[in-house]
Image 1: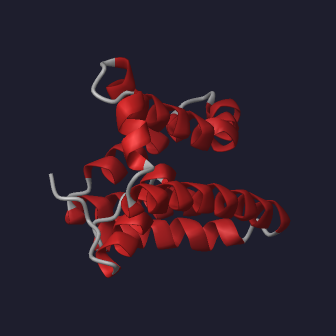
Image 2: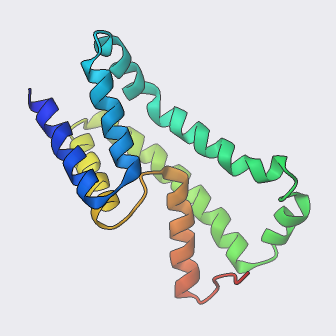
Length: 153
C-alpha cells in the first residue's frame, strides 16, 4: 500500500509542476503495477530500464549523423575549439562518474532512495531532466559559461 501512496504523491507533485515526463513515467509505473504480470515486468524494467533509456537517447543523438547534419568535418572542428575539448572531457568525466555511481548503488542500495528523491526534486522544482547524457551537456555548458566560451550560433 505504501508504494501506491508514494507513487500517487509523485504523480500529484508531477501534475502540480506540469512535468509531462514525470507524469507519463509515474502513470506507466502505476498501470504496470496494477497488472497481474507486474511482479515479472517491474524487476525487468528496474534492471534494464536505464540501459534502454540511454539507448533511446543515444539513438536521438546519432540521428543528426544519419541525416548528414553532422559529419567528420564537424567532429574535426570540435577539436579545434576549447569548447570542443571541454565537451569531450565532460563526456569522459560523466562516463567515469557514472561507472563509480553504479558501483556505489551496488554496494549501497539505500542510496537509490536518496537519488530518486533528489532526481524528482530536481525535475519537478528546478525544471531539470532525468537523463545521463544531458548531464554532460549541462556540465559543459556550465564550464563554458564560466570561461565565457559558449558558442553562439
